[in-house]
Image: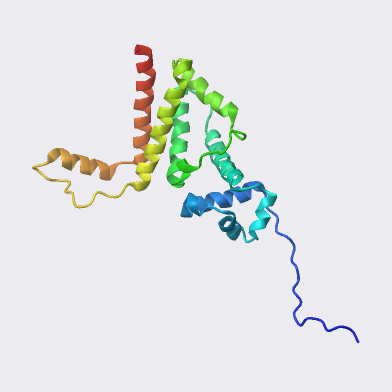
Length: 211
């Protein structure tokens, strides 16, 4: 007599296969939808429909996953860095960073654990453009940090911005306040960032020359 067979034997299906970029993309989707604190091997694997252990094929640990997310986002920003006048190219580059930080509200917290994947060529191009504008080598770090801080702060402010409620836009006793309320309501925040960035860049470059 042959041994009894299970009524419904489980069949193991083919293992799902992904690329590293797909895994990182799923992690970025989790970041965009739920914030950086929600990014984990469990949440990312749930999006991909696999066991969390399967992710170790692509990344060694969460630090490596976060670093890969950082690299993928800023590689996309780097793709916008075309040839052209330094001031315009820098404005386009930092506006791209601003746009992504608005889309991924916690992106500013995505600090790379190591510099292993840093795009050194991209960094050198950004610094070279600052130098071409007249920024002295010893001031490049300060200028870059100021521009980066403006970008991060503006993205946080844009993400947190809410319509101005309860303030009239036509109060004759407070004409300046009314004008500001109207302006805030009409404001294109990305255009506003571009203008503010240009003002700061010019001030940093010209201030350094005057000093």
